[in-house]
Length: 237
Image (cartoon, rainbow, N blue to C red; front, side, top):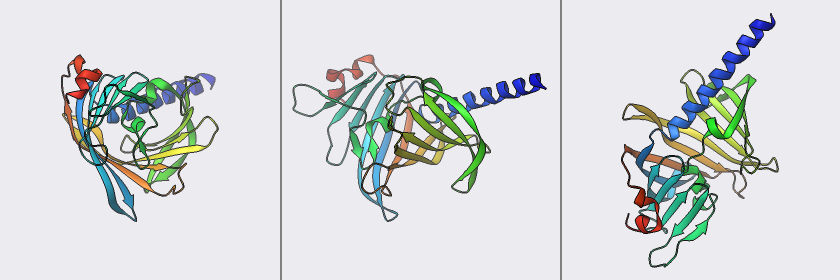
């Protein structure tokens, strides 16, 4: 009996790790890519203010966000590991910013960065199932491996039938709920399943019911020069 339970636990652990890897791959499907995206504030079910941007991503640690419209048009955000800088046209030096810097509404720079659940967290499968959007989901409790993680606790709802993530809830070190992300659409790009739309609720804002929608309109694998991921290279994008 003990051997049977141990085998079942090991099988469940393998399943959970595979689910986390799939959840990661839907958001970071390619080692190098250029993503065209839009962030929109949703008011009473209708899209309001929006901003278009491109993300140049290389590996886990390097990226450049280029704003193509809205109040930030022409600005860039350069990411190198845990560090981020804002590059403003005409400014002589990049300005350090944090991953929590606002993109639009409830969306932050971290929402388009490369958090990896399968690498950064340890997961425990809860016994109960819950519905998300009318679909039955398993619930994973994630605990950050690093004591300095901005979100030490995360809940992830996994749609076992479709084998895709459904929702994620992030908690602050204080235990307070910080942000809820719902994955609303997926698509296939270059033979891989990727998130094409997600909705973000900032649970710390005055209006916690306000929604920011992130749409990934184009997702292109690309070979990107290392020089792009420097202040000088990013200025030329």
